[in-house]
Image (cartoon, rainbow, N blue to C red):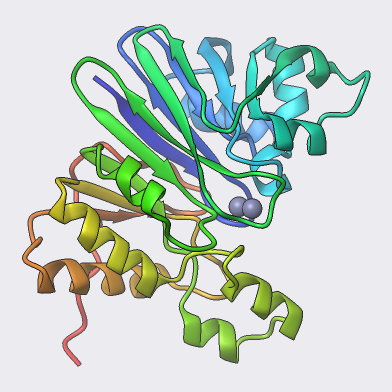
Amino acid sequence: MICVYTLFSGSSGNSIYVKGDDSEIIIDAGKSCGAIEKALNALGSSLRKIKGIFITHEHSDHTSGLEIISKKYQIPVYMTAPSYDNYVRGGSYLERMAKREPVSYEKDVGSLHISSFPVPHDSAQNVGFVIKDKDCSFGIATDIGHPTKEIADKLSLCEKIIIESNHDIKMVESGPYPQFLKERILSNGGHLSNDKCAELCAYLCDRGVKEITLAHLSKENNLPKLAYEAVRCQLNCCGFENVALKVAFADIAVEATGGREYPFPISKE
Ligand SMILES: [Zn+2]
Ligand SMILES: [Zn+2]
């Protein structure tokens, strides 16, 4: 069995906890060592039990706690070569603990089989992951500049997924960000909008995805209710009322494998 929780999600920091039958890993370490340890403790775990840290990409909202955590707890870190070259300083502790991997790589950590795939984003490299054991498969993709066939193909192999639903396009356009930042978010190397996420989710549900957690929501350019409604409406329109849909909180753990619907009523207007 695989249990997955978003511990932290969004531009203030990202980390996902994955618990298998005999091993535990985290995806990204974009919060302080203390914050991640506290979040794991609340779920009955600890960084002492974590057997690997898998990094999607080198941006600070995914790596800010990485060096201290890997040093304090001696946890192996897996990064793609472009992210490693961009992020790991010569002579740093991370140079010893981080493994420089190809963009598409596979690892076994106990019963968990982890494989990566490329995701377009304006980092040196970004990847998503498919995590499998003998019973199930779970997919993760965030910081998606634009949907690709490879993302769709990889996530459609999974029963449950975490996927980015970063922003509402109107909120970005009318919001307070400077023009260059608006253009970056909306570009092919930025982040996935609620509408594009909804389209991709409908495609994935048609291929068998049963449970979705929306993640990496922008604090300034989105609302949990907007993201939820955009995807829920699209899924319902396509006949996928039974697919469970949740929204990750920025700072509170959400179980992505719990089967429980996040309770946003769909507005009637
Ligand atoms: Zn990023
Ligand atoms: Zn990010």
